[in-house]
Length: 103
Ligand code: SF4
Image 1 (tube, rainbow, N blue to C red):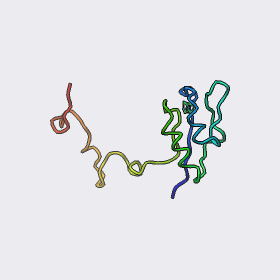
Image 2: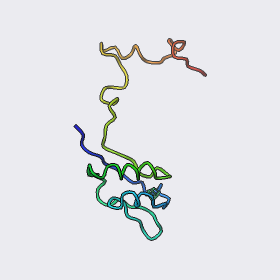
Image 3: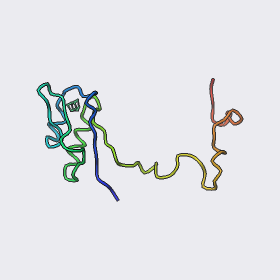
């Protein structure tokens, strides 16, 4: 089940292009110099998702990021095996020929 989209805006990165406010004026406001602020707490209503996603994707400096959604591949631990022997997958000196460690 989806919890909806949430975004954040890093104002230290924003370079004042104003593109976000053109795409989704209900979510971004611009100050006198064109720098953006989030309007609201970053929660995006489902009908506005495409507009906000366009703002996120078109921001030239990637100041807008999506938060609060988990990637499906993170649902399970990133390493280990189903039989409970995670140490077998470790990349160590003893098996470096298998995983190609270079010095
Ligand atoms: S598009 Fe990006 S750089 Fe431009 S005002 Fe919005 S957040 Fe700032």
